[in-house]
Amino acid sequence: MRYNRRKFIKNTVSGTIGITCTSILQSFARERNLRNNKTLVKKAVAILEDGCSLAIPYWMIDSGKRGPSLVLIAAQHGNEVQGAEVARRFQKLCSEQLIAGKVWLIPMANLPAIRKRRHSFDLGPEENNRLNPHKLHNMQRHWPGNPEGNDTGRIAWSLYQSIFRHCSHVVDLHCWEHVKAAETLVYYDHEPSRIMGDVTTTRFISSSPVPEVKSNTLMLRRLMVEKGNGAITIELSGQYQIQELQVQTGLSSMINIAKRLGMIQGEPELSGKHIERRSDNSHEVVASCSGIFMPGFSEEKGRILVPEDNVIKGQMLGHIINEIDLKKEIVHAPVNGYLWQFGVCHWALCDASLPAQHPYVEAGGRLALIITVEDDFH
Image (cartoon, rainbow, N blue to C red; front, side):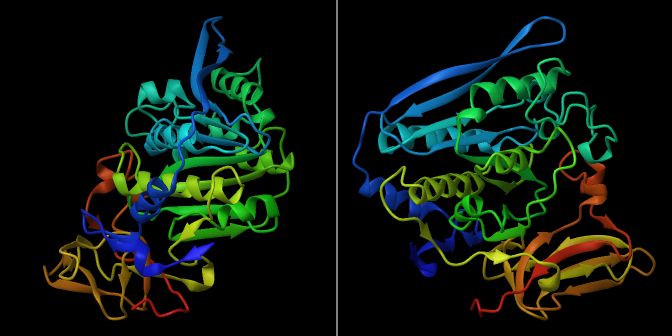
């Protein structure tokens, strides 16, 4: 496994500084020895409650040789769409470079929710899953599905029967609010999952123990671990949109995982160690007054600050126009570190509701979460 931080951290077209994947992908393109693996578009067919059928398409790439069976599932939630493009690009790479095992790629798992352009298809405009007390159509809560359940459970069942019961490793690709940085979620006490999480290219990683099973229906990652399979979740940054930097992060993570599993030639290439987000290294920055928040501008980067940016203690993160006396209240970074969350996001709805994106902030409201690191990043 090769580490070269300077090689992989650079200014992107948008000016964002973070763990980028351009070098990984260019290196992969130079080194590849093209193959012609069998690639099929197949469909998992669910019979819905009204008796109609719904086909969920997916790619299956077979190397023709024994090895792991890796699944990438994207868009379990209809507003989390960046993984669809990750799946498309990884399909092309696998068709040319897969040397062992099989790969299943599901770019649009929850097609009804995608067609409704919602997290779940039963939600209305500017509604978010977190405010839905029942979560009846949250696909993530339905695994392994139910052929006699509601439509979402039936779709999950068809995918499980067609794909997941055959697999050995799973990457569940999601997207959370744009104010949060991309992050890998992994169970640290499950070795098949941990080795996958170790080679992703998100800057941040969050580790937790395998939780106790308390229900017959589980989140997909927990179900796969219960069956002895390796499984991780990757949260890219931003819903209702597709950003090139996020797609590259997802794609390079998949390449590294495939290399780690011996499915693609080469060693995983990383820019350095992940930054683990924990309670003891997370520092919240809150508003000192109520008013309009203006994010800080970085002269070095030529743009406003965004999640994943490194900041220095005392650096100006922005300012608030005080609603009482109109004074400019400067917001400073209390520590050195990296921005895991940055910007105003009301009620955790900022990627589902325009009012939730409003720059008005109440006194005490969170403006940023900075994660400190032991190593100096300058």
